[in-house]
Length: 165
Image (tube, rainbow, N blue to C red; front, side):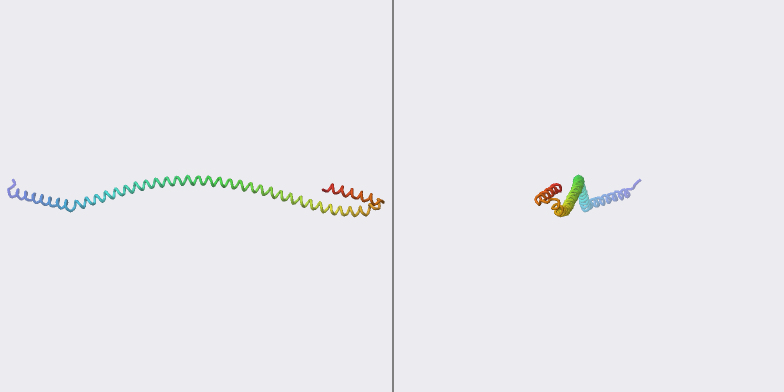
């Protein structure tokens, strides 16, 4: 069926193919394999670097989340303290306003008392002068004895002084 020439042709074609494959495998192993291994190593290193970066990023994210939680707690505490401060300030302001009202009321009362006292003094002086003038003119006629009239006059002045103070 096959002739020897055809068998030889097929045999040499196979040998040539094997040689060609061997050369290709040799060239691949000699020149391409180190490049591929290098590329694979670089990819593995890049993958490891990215994984380490991811782990570092996850750790940093955890730390930042923890810091944020602490800051939120501090912020909430600060809000509570500010609210307490506002309540204390409002209470003190209200107390000061009440004290101011009381103080203003006391000052007004004192001023009213002073005005009333001065008015009373003015009226007393006016009345006293008018009484003294009238008594000075009327008593000597009523009392012929000068000493008796002076005593009566002194008693009236003392009585008025006692009642007015």
